Length: 415
Figure (cartoon, rainbow, N blue to C red):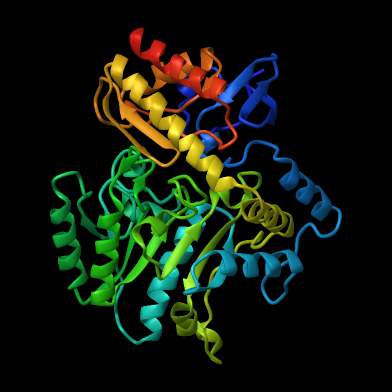
């Protein structure tokens, strides 16, 4: 019987096999036919400590027996209050307010609305968002609008709003990016810059140095343009630090967090904002409230999972695990580059990426062929066109990581 499920980012007309996973543990997934699959991409970049992490699973189970869901408009509950306090204690002091949502895309939508609302409250008609070429911030309308135009959203172009674009700071052309940002910030309509710090994920795992992020923040600060850091993917250790912005020594006005917020177990996102952004919406006038919510805002079970994740970060040597994985990634990538025909091998923290022969496009035919090979050899990897990247959970052992790279090497050799 054909499944009625419509899968994301899947062309069902190709009739590619879709394995059914029945359980997971650590860095492994187990299929209905008894196969063990190594999760080389943290199940779309969300799983940090490993699948079914015991402390997080216990917190979910305990909370599920106490309070499952509550409207969060005008009501509250302890998991949300405790998580907000923990986040404010963990993140930079300047980020004093926590707004809950349920995905990375919606956290970005909230960030954009906060930025525009701040300027509206000040009585200034600043509404233009500055974005970076090749960026990706999600698949809702606002998030698509501030992402790269092309394959992902060409069909929906009539729905998208105009933005100002600056070039990606490619090696040797960094000053072009900074000059373009300075010009964009000089526009009286410039409201905010939104960036993926250090690594552009879906754009092809494109990486740039912390010093450029530092200068971009400084340019925005001098011009009074709000700075939004989309740390949905880069947060929670992926780039080697808890937040990518740490490496640049900056604090954004607004920051988006999701994916690893619950250790990757259940959906939850937050948009953290400075007190200045919050106070712009603070009033006795109900018409100036922040108009955004979703039915599952601050779901108690999800908040409990996030609290358990923060406890793991606080009480266990997570950054040591991150550093060890980053070192192993560097070693594996160097070994692959020495023997296989790959281009532009690069790494940022626990993220490793490179290109194989083909067109630098998401729709390059390398992707489906490579995915099929990886799937057949018990590895979950999902190339971005001809870009292969490895981003496993921090708990992966040397044997599994070596297997991933061995399978990659054989896949390249057999192309």
